[in-house]
Length: 332
Image (tube, rainbow, N blue to C red; front, top):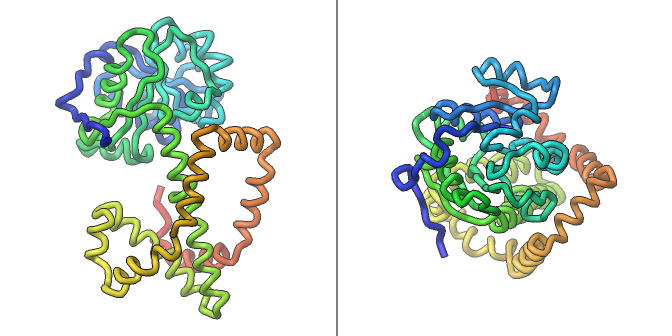
């Protein structure tokens, strides 16, 4: 069943009106949320570790940096530090400092869904997950637009958690686009699955395998790089703007025919079976347990695989070719 879409006109901002909001962290999402909420009229502070390098940047944007302990006493506390830091932050500070019936807001459901964090029962626990990077959350807000977002409720101690989640989404600009209701489980499981099957694991392995197939057959590594990696952005941009059917109207007949007849030979029933296996491991917690064990061991697999990836021919070829295209480098 499709999720109902809520817009600004459907959302009452009063549940968050007058509440002090503490944004924990000042990375891309933290900066975007803090500035958007402030510009929407909310009282906002930014909670940072003592000596944080982000304190000066925070002040430059006209925001007040405070200690994490002080931030935790706010009526709405937004957890925007990395997932890997959240468990200790909750255990050591938030659990002890947050006030009864205050709200703890997450942008990703991982630590709640897998019970790495088990909040006090007298707290509201909300999900407001922007469907875009922090930079876009801020840019679209400034342009009078918005990035869609997912909202959900894990705990409703106050009786107002759902209304507060929607109100938060509204003042962060998401109601200008679309606010869709979900659960912590659905947001977490679909996000992990998409990362593994498509956005990271899937596309990386597809690109590398295609590059190796061409170079092993004697084709130029430079040309293989352009065909199999560089041009991914062209297709991704079209898919982003037009969807799959719209993109097919913009490609050649040969490309479209090859899509229909050869694509299913690459991503086939065996691939779908593997996807179902991935999803099962995500849903039953095996992936999360495996990741915990990897991190506790010092991330040996990640370090080993990173080193191998960095020494792959596709990286050497890509670095040389990208150096000839300085316009690819983002200007900060």
